[in-house]
Image (cartoon, rainbow, N blue to C red; front, top):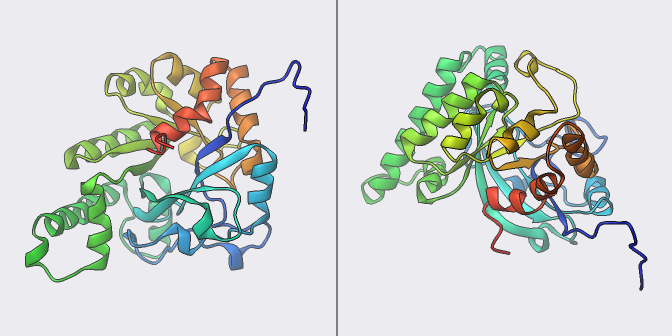
Length: 295
């Protein structure tokens, strides 16, 4: 087959570096909502592969838009939400689609854990408690990791202890103070991590650049649906990129449907991001920040 590509661009397959494809099924509601086990703030043993509906129409729509890889996983209801997976958007069963499992461990700061557990009259209902719950979980998992033979087997601690063996951590943080708390705790425990969403990252862009912190920005095409998004701007990825921060762009599907990943990058260019950097943000940078660029 010969395609006349005159005046067009030929690109690698696009990569959505942070989304929830397959965990919130297209047009179903509760029956297809499998991304937040919001019954305990610490659920490191939740595995995205066990909740993904790989025949969801969104995978077909992703492929048709050139998105051949997605990094998808649990939402941000819990302080420790569980394990993301990097996978292809084509295959007859989940095992055929996996690139890396687990690819990362999800942790969340700010408004979401507060709202979920305040509603249940449980901790955490403050930012202090979110940080404390996370520190306690990490401290226990590290002790388990260091003294494995002396402890009784604990499945949750076993799974969380993988972050001390090099498993990447995806830190959900929108607001500037939450971003800094995520970084502070990650450094305290020696974690490999990215800051995901990073909505107010442009306010501390020089700090992020100086500390060589990689970010995954988005969703870019939404309303300010909650207070911590009040300073959201589509200029964010361009400002971060120009400051020297390695920046990938996400859809956060289903917040923005995954097929609009190229549009998100395009709007970032319109608002100041270098065009080649925006292309990298949904290809090579998206792979590098998720540690799957060896493929």
